[in-house]
Image (cartoon, rainbow, N blue to C red; front, side, top):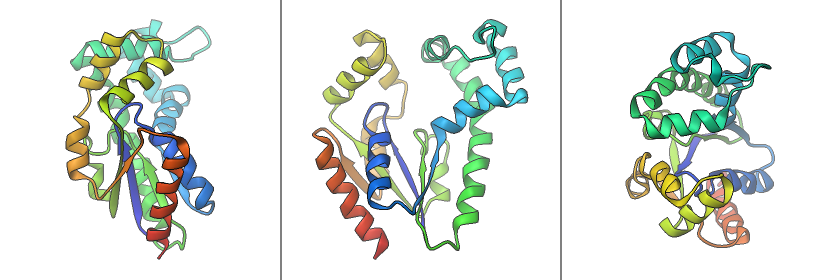
Length: 198
């Protein structure tokens, strides 16, 4: 079965789309790059040491948890720090999911890789096809402001820091439009699932 990449912009609904896919294809395997990044930052001593060296030991709490809000504000305000964090995490995440994708090549079950920075890291070369989950700019901004403790200008800065959604749409094999209700998204997941399974 093919390896399918799922990407999009921040707050366009990639996670919800993956949940919809899980409901219609329960046997499929999913790789979540955001979860992999969290696991690396919280459980991998080498990664923690590199992050501490780059961002200072205060980026971790006394119990060793990464201060995500502080990290987010640093990397979205400083392109150099963002690049430094990506250089620590991305090669490790890519290695994890490419090994998993390879191990599933001969499986009868679909493999999905939910990777926000798929195009930015050249990860599309490891996929048989790519789905971009997109929505209107106004919906994206509203969702981001609602989910994170950010004002509109900070949210706009986060969106601008990513590859433009229009560019991701241009490069996609499949586009899922997610400006509406969840059942509309679920219907699109169902149609794509049927297409892949056939």
